[in-house]
Image (cartoon, rainbow, N blue to C red; front, side, top):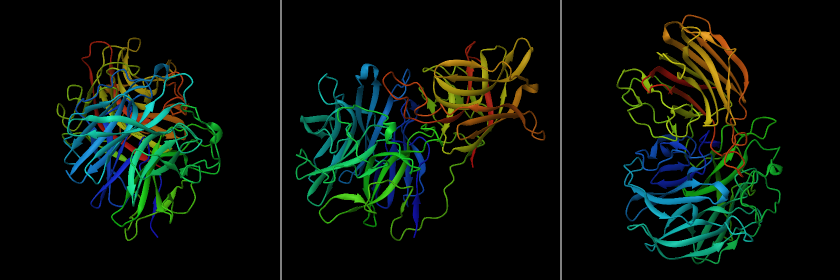
Length: 552
């Protein structure tokens, strides 16, 4: 029997929202402070997912100055068969200070999944994680978490539902408070509506974004409720099935809920789909911590579980349990062929670089990154330092494995110590590792060295500097379960030389970084990058011959 191996989308691909149109399946995921915003993937077998683009790729949302882990949250993808339009809703989390959580939510549409997408239309600021439901009577509804900030009230708030006029982007009537969750795990959010037989089903994320995360469900004969909780009183999917009472906790890591018997952790935030074969699956997020550490460098990834409806009309996992698995049954009659490689290689011979590349805080424009000025190379004009949340010149891809090799070749002419170019590891503006070429006044020429940021502290590797002949170098970074080694060579026929080894980069993980005060780090993920800095005159640039990531 064919099996789906999880995660189906490794690396930063959280909050998956899945739909089917015909026999094709699509998923949208969160992107936080990264551009282009809202990753889009497609699949025919639910096992192999190809990235096909992004929805926010024209500077629609300004992410400059975004603090970890704010930005673009929980996009919800839907399809209205009546109008044959794809719809996206999402929240732009603008502020998390004081746990005020100011988020503006938007809707947008397209006639093709790859776009062009409409300009986002403002919908509400009542909370975050909006989702659309297109009812069979032609009405449309939006569900969302109403964020609670008042002392003495149960946090994080109520799940609310309202009718929406999609043509005008306006809420019709009033919001209806329907529940604060269906279990005692608390932190109910990300509400999504479905209809099966005679019931509306409301699926929620619960238990916080940490180790108590789960998917819970309730049902009602009427869209505005009242909603009856699942009779088990527990999540229908989780990585940690034991009972937890956590009502009133707005969010928590819940490290005490770590399951030592499971590779998969943090399973939650689910999205349901019926297949063209008449079966049911749920896409949900998950994490994989480093061995012997409760640190998750790959962030929150996308997995899939096969589901079924019970005789009394409740949804459950196909195996009858609520423990999310690393393998699940594939669709009947659909052959799943071989393993899907997540290796990346771009020799920049095309007019456009691969769509896997993302940039933190700012959008990608040809003024600072292009393949046209020097064909066969990616040219990156240096700007702010990597500490910047405004204009860092970084081109990055999601890390998708615990063992891999990042490899590039860079040509760079610098005449000031504030001009640099190279590659490395990146989580956010306060947390990264950077091997780079720069100008040394004492050496009167180019050198190769390393700079690191850890929880906002600048760490300069003054004892690891090598003279660079001819303004060019081939660089290699080997990542192994939270440890990094960096090597170099100046000619292809030469042996690799070690620049620095055994660097502990396990802190480049969701729990290891310093996110907003009151938050448990972040929930995005580790990236590999090439980039350049020019804090001198903004007139230098680096040419990269290729970019390669090979997973072990």
